Image 1 (cartoon, helix red, strand yellow):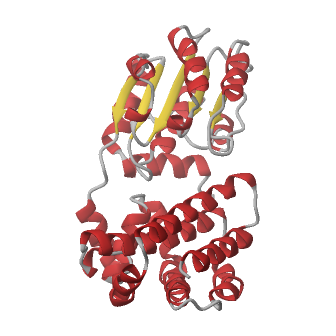
Image 2 (cartoon, rainbow, N blue to C red):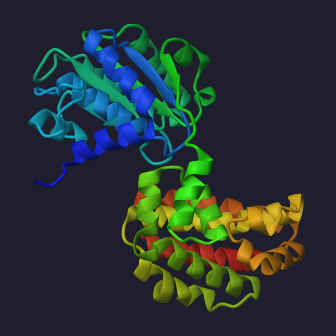
Length: 340
């Protein structure tokens, strides 16, 4: 029988944060789960996976002897696929979580549970709530209607209103052991700069494995380096390279995000060499150190900062369904203009 998505989430939670998920499973079993939690920690630490496993445990009809949800019942499967009517996952609409989204959540949760006596809501990237959305959520957290458990996920709890933090139970996720990740990546026969790049992109072992499939990380790194080389020489062949070399490597939306991150990171390497004299062995693209240093010397402070800002701004267009090739082409033309 193939492994379900729910079972994968349970495995991920155990692998990423064994102590935290074990503790929370025990809390659920005792009936001591708080009405509001705030999970804080950098991307790739398994916050969403753990939250969904908690929700599955609350609704699972076949809890295992070890206290974990089964991962195969209809309740677990629907929660893992965001299809359960009493478990709502809220994420940014574009660049922020808007007050209208929180109002909709409050209306939904003021109703009775559809299938039981409990409701769960999860707000991913909670730090992206607008001020109005944060204030609207605050009263709901203070005075939840019925049997409601809320989970707010953020990369840094300091970005949220103090009033929200004070009304939730804060759990800070410890960072993944960097030494263990480096050792793992070395076994994948990655070069030093490829390891640096992977660790700057994610600390999630599952995502690292995905990046390493079919040498994808190595292949895309080479293409980003070629793209950068052409930009550094003010060669407009950087533009057709997007369609001919990069796009065939893009497998999904996550690849799109990673590719844009790589483009940003190579210019951050330029920034770090120019302003901090960062050595090659600490860079994501240290194998082209001489070109990176030369480019930094040629670019003014404003040019370099404008390029990095432009890549970040264009990366947000993914959230409004702009074609990815168009995004890369705009970034390329903008970079060429900035570097003239």
